[in-house]
Image (tube, rainbow, N blue to C red):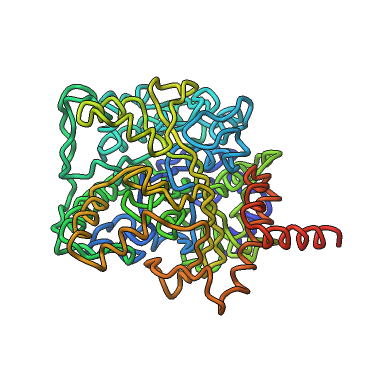
Length: 546
C-alpha cells in the first residue's frame, strides 16, 4: 500500500491523493479531482526543544503535539529565516527572504509579490487565516477568503489566538464552507501562545495593548506548571525568576497544545483526517535571552512536523536542514501548481516521499534586519517612563513616518547566521564596542524581557551571571560556536586557531548565500572583514570562473 501511495505522489503531483487513499470514508463525499486540504498551525515564539517530542520544557507539556510528531514526519533541523514574527511569516508564505519580497522588517512587502494563499485562492482553494493577519502585509496581497470576522470569531485578536475552542470553531466553519462549494481548503492557524504575555502574566487591560479596552475571559490551559517542574534551556542561568518565567511559558505551551488537539479533533470528527496535510511549525524561538530577536541556535531552530496519514511515512529526519521558506514551493507542488519564478526555498515533496532529494542546501542562513517599537508600545512606555524617547534616541532608534502605525521607531540590526549542522557563524553588522555606553541594553538587545531583567538583578551579586549577562549585551563583530558541544552558546571560538579552517568555510558559505540570494548586505560584509573579505571574494570569483 505504501509503495502504491508513493507512486501516486510521484506520478500525479499529489493531485487527488487524499481521495485515492481514503475514498471509502463515509463522511468524505468529495470529488477525486480535489487537491489535499492543508492545515498549517503556526506557534508564536516556540523553541525547537520545548515540545515533549523534542525534549520538553516541562513534563507532559504537549501530548497532542507528541502524537502528531509520532504519526508524522518530524524534522530535527527545522529553521526560520528570521527570528521575529512578521518577516518570518511573510517569508513563509512567499518562499523568499525579506530582501527578495521588498522589505527588511516590520513593513509590508512590495506590491506584486506573489503569495501562497492568494495563488491557492485563485486556483480553487478556500483560504483562511486565524489571528496575526496584521503581521502579513499588505493584507490584500494574501487574498484570504476568510479571516477572524468571516469565521465568526469576534473576540479581540489576542484573545482568539489563545482560545482552543475558537480555532476549532473557525476550522469547522471553513470545512462547512468547503463542503458547500466542493473545494479544498488551506488554513493558517496562528496561535498566540507562547507569545508574551504568558499565562499568569498581568495583562494591561487599561492600556488597550493587544487586548482591547475591556477585560475578557481567556481559557485556562489544561495543565498549569510550577517553577520546580521546568527544564531551564542551556543558554540561561538557573535562577528562580527565570524558572518562574519558564513555568508561565510552559503553561502557555500547554494551552497551545490544547489548540492543536482541538483542531485535530475537528479533522477527525468531520472525516478530514486522511484528506488533510497537517503542518506544525513555529515562527521563531521563545521570547527570552539567546532566542527571539537574535541569530543563535535557540533563535532560529524551530519544531517542524508534517502529518498526512497513509501518505507521509512517519519518522524523524535528522539529516536535512529545512526552512519555513520551503513551505511555499512544497504546497504549490502538492496542489499541482507551478513554483513561483523567484523562490529561495526547496520543495519538501521528495523528503515526504522518503526519497533522497536531487539537491539540498549544505548550510542554512538565518537573519535579522531591524528592531521595532510600535507606536502603541511607545505611548504605553511614555506613561511609565517619561524619558523613553531619550532612551530610544540613545539606543539608535529613529522614528519611521513611513510605518502604517504613527509614532513607531525602528533601528537597524543587520545580522546573519550561517549554520552547517554543527558550527554556527554569526556576523553582527550592527556591532558597536561602545554600545553599552549609548544604551542600557547595548546595540544588540531591543529591550529587557522579564528573564533578562532577572539576569540583570542577579548580576549584581553573582559573578557567573554577571559575565553571562554582559556577554549577551556586548557581543562581537563575528561569533563562532560549536553548537554540538556548546548548545548554550558560551564559548565564542572566532579567534581560536584550531577552528580557523571551519571559520573560513562558514564565511565562504555565507558569502555564497549572499551572492545567490542577492543580499544587499554583501558589500558591507566584505568591507568589514578586510583582508579576509578580499580573499573570500577572490576565491568566489575563481569558483565562478570555473
